[in-house]
Length: 264
Image (cartoon, rainbow, N blue to C red; front, side, top):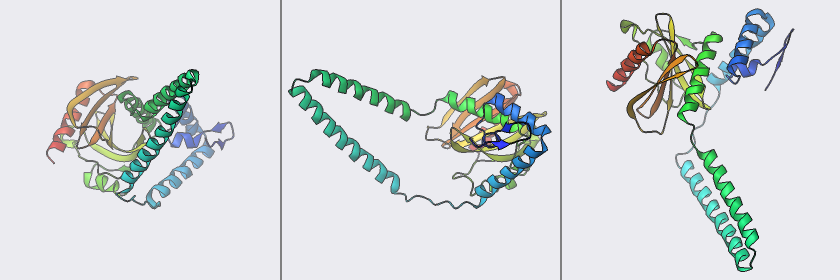
């Protein structure tokens, strides 16, 4: 991780900017930024540079057939290696090398276990814990929004070109949940939209990202580190709302958003 020289310490500004620090370390960095003018200037410059890359970087879409070609190549390679490996094992058995066979079988079991571990999708707990950390960091860094507006017709177009999906955006000012704005965020190394709402001075971060999981009418009410969360899936998107407001208020917000998306 890149470190930036400071008058008093080495401040991990890059890790702080990229939400890579643990909550305790992020809080220490945030408190330092309040007092250090040099680090404030460096941090603002990093934010500008990051924003320029996000807005001006050139993106190329992969050909539609590429995923199928990759899967087919992996399958061919796997079958070829498996065939060769099994042939070697059978030769060992025929020659009476049972010990070698046992060792090879143990190795296969180990490889399979590692593969299954790496291929396993992130658990719901992983998503929830990281959502809370991102929520806390956005408040501590005073970087709640990249685009600040209560107009959904301003916030929704802002995400165009920055995401490969279109997050639904609504304003619930009349119901007591005004839209504050939105920003780019990341959960489990996946780009996400973060919509920010407010209710009686309580901030709600609503994280939205694509998912291959099936839609679910069920909502999960969770609590982590003093924060309440509400998660659901709809339209091949995962929604995670995080706030320090009470469960009833957050549930009311979630109901408003789900009803709004069902009307589309």
